[in-house]
Amino acid sequence: MKNRKYGKPLGNLLSIKSDFFEHNDSMLEMSARQADALLIQKKREKCKICHAPISGEPLYKSQRMDYYLCPVCGHVNSAHEDTEDFANRVYLIDSYENNYSEEDREKYRNRLKSIYEPKAAFLIDALKEDGLSKEDIKLLDDGAGSGYFVGAMRGMGVSATGIEISSSQVEFANKMNGEEVLKQADSREIAGILKNTDANVLSFIGVFEHIINLDEILSAIRDNGSVRYVFLSVPMFSMSCVFEASHQHCYNRHAGGTHTHLFSDSSLEYMSEKMGFEELKSWKFGSDMMDLYRMLCVSLEQNGNGRLKDYFAPKFVKMIDELQETVDKNEFASEIHLILKRR
Ligand SMILES: [Zn+2]
Image 1 (spheres, protein in one colour):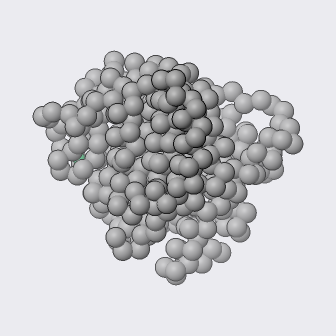
Image 2 (image 1 turned 135 degrees about the vertical axis):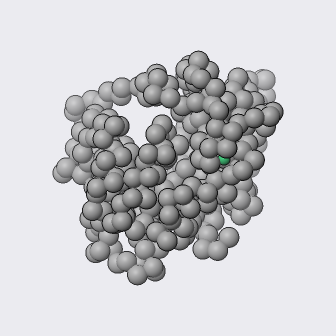
């Protein structure tokens, strides 16, 4: 692939994701409840991206859900549709505390620095190479969550703001950043905001996979000529899917839960074309080996092989970045960061 960067050292992500190891059973239960919510929705009739009819045999089944590989665009769709009712059932109203300790702020800064600053630097460098200096970027981040990406961009001197559905997350983000960096927006307002914003760069970090009215959002971006670039990260059909399908007693982080469909290089290309955009630069690095490592450790514990797990774990951790980079370079990684440019 031209202009594609591969790999990213895990660093302290191992400790950030420790919940997945320690709370496998409760995470698996949560995922089962989310699967219950999806299984009662209507059957998906067409591919989420290219609208080709879904027919024939599923490619695989995991945690009671069938997954179909689209023969036209290569997208992977769950058998049931993500509807508004599904969203109401799975996106819980999160409650954040009103008082934040210095420890919370420290955690926030660490996460912003280790996870979001590299993404921000990647975007800023690519746009600079393409002739847009950071002083000229006006970024709007949709689905801004706790404001980490907006915070990282602002920290690097970029004019950046965000919109987010959850008002408690907006409040949290604004408190952590010490100023109003995010605004609350209801889901039905978002297409209108994207259609009318004067931002020249839009970002969607881990957002497209959750959008029910994705077609409407893509049209809004296509129709807003001010938007020159779109930066997005999405989950991909990847090795993690295979590890999940083969480890049914381990928590499925990737396919399942709120992820009801997964992208591929070809479905992303199809989607970009539909938006009137093309790939400028991409960065592929996944968590597949992290998932495999977790599933092996959890399974060894489950079948009474705790001592082997303790022996094996540090050896695997030593290899993990190298193994993942091989997966990344072979285009079967769980995540992509993609910068699209208007054609
Ligand atoms: Zn398709």
